[in-house]
Image (tube, rainbow, N blue to C red; front, side, top):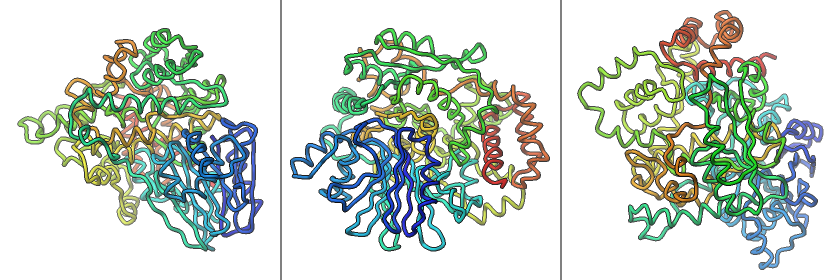
Length: 629
């Protein structure tokens, strides 16, 4: 796992060196620069495969192409054999050279069609004078770029590298701000900075003689399947088809030349990964878990994780957390460079730091909910069909709106209110309301009149509803899963995992995001994904008899913590500093009275606003770090 940086259309070695150095946290084991006229590539290396021969940027054997690559190609050994059979010259043992030779042998489309991995890479083809930037199928690895006024282009794994150039426009993008307040992340291709864009997941960017073109190369739609499997609703048939693909994905993700472990919460996803790792390993699996003190009892998963660890004989380690939210705020904000409102990032920060003390690579269950159908909102979609006209629905919504909301892990009142609020909307907007945190009306109440007008003029985004409506296939649950594979998974889950793990030089791998598994599960109908009383039906069937029985029957908790309690502890400092009315007024973006209302309602228990308050804290800290210059 690494960090990449580069430029095209400009010769500036000192800038390239500064950009590359800014990514040192992504790769502690080495740095490399390659400069050829107006082309510059930089690389920071975290050595995981081919420890002796994998330094980058790497030249192709014939010297006619060079690459800077962040990620892992998990099926590289099979591809290497295919290339050797085609008489390609390969001098090294790792996956980077496979990308170079594969590009020469198969072309861009042929190479990308064969890859199972997580990657972002920049490849310069000298003979064609063409630069290729590519990002993996689900955006597990990040890639940003900036086009300068003179036509030159900079690119890097993180915005901080691009901000080394004073010509990059650091101005606040209001459309991105509005999306952040809604989703707690900024959807590609935009970023929070006017002068920086993201290459979306599953896309390639080509630059040839100053001309830039972007194309999608992957869409999470069903692959060609056995017609009988497509037509059947048999859980047994689907489990039989998926099981070997899942086992292969986990096996591929365990290839490493450095110590490797796994996160283990005791939930189905992490337990399934540990179970398959234990089946395939000759040594005890290293597992890692977080827990909390007395105030976090409703979020505690350590007892179950311990039982799962004993079941598989893992070497198990635990970290008990009691976080001062404001103490870690600046470090987390600096790791993202943009506002990122999911407070799971704080947990990822602490867990990654702890895990890196023992291993270099960790497998995680990210993607299990999106791929197999684990979120309660999927079952909610099925339940909500036809409910919008049920008598008494409006009355129930009003009653719940007036009720208080506890900050425990499973607040049925909060879930019921959100569910009923969404039932009145068409399916795309309904699903978008369940994924988002603040509808347009709530954001408008927060804005000052001038900000509201500027946001309306800049334009608003509706990426979740648009993705839900896009597929030409599938039932309502398949469409929701597609929307999450296009949005929530890459931009919330995977973005947080990448930044918090790389902050500490830890490589996190996500087998549930394996391309072959994603394409297979995209075709699975709702009936074999979720039921009235159970989610992830296929995964549960596959793991029956492989994991302890209690893992299969536990209610979903998720990667969460007693943040509401921790937030209340910090209320005094929040009100006196970051969200003080005078500070809010000085920024000029939000109405101080509306921010004060959110704080008061949260403090009194009238409404759980912890997520929105945290997003505002992150935004304020981001402005102090990146805008107050």
